[in-house]
Length: 133
Image 1: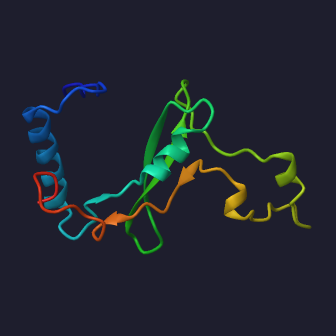
Image 2 (image 1 turned 180 degrees about the vertical axis):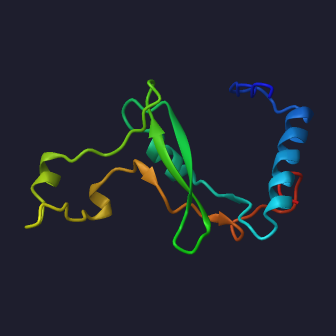
């Protein structure tokens, strides 16, 4: 298998890149005709993950929800390729219940470090183009 090309910022996509991407997405759709085609990642979600201290990129894990639908789990990673996951702060440690289980914190108290509700396509889809039709 040939190595994947590196993405270089401000480098325009070539016709070969688009043709390869189109082939890969078509292969996937052919094997998964009723499956999710992709996911929509908002600027707010990506910036929330990327703005974490020491974050150098976003990793996407594949998952299946309880209904068997494909889902993405997004997490930032550091320069050592380690996922950046929340660690309990002193305030969070004070919120342990009687069984020693962490009580759920209101979402406004936690910075974005993990994204699990990434809208799928469909319904969050583009008009027909070489990547999705």
